[in-house]
Amino acid sequence: MKKDKKNLSESLKDLDEIVDWFEERDEVDVEGGLKKVKIGVKLVSEIKKQLKDVENEFEEAKKELGDGNL
Image (cartoon, rainbow, N blue to C red; front, side, top):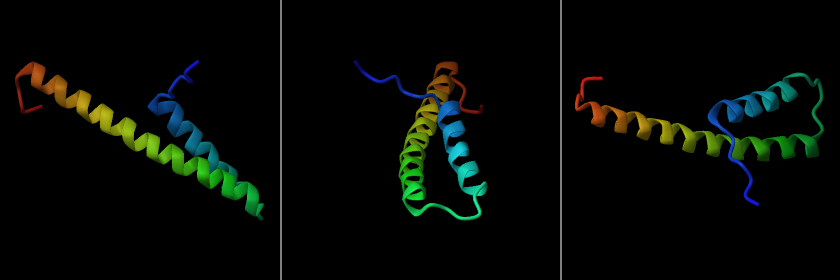
């Protein structure tokens, strides 16, 4: 069974939770922090792709309107 992909809002929320996790700690567990960083790197990569997809969809919508001045 294929895992459902997160949407952009969910990915950004997950990344924000990781940032909050780091901000809430006076001392960070190195191993735990490394796991969070790895997850964050994957999320950033996913978010970049999602933003590119949104940009492409916007460009397609502009083409459909036939107006390059949007």
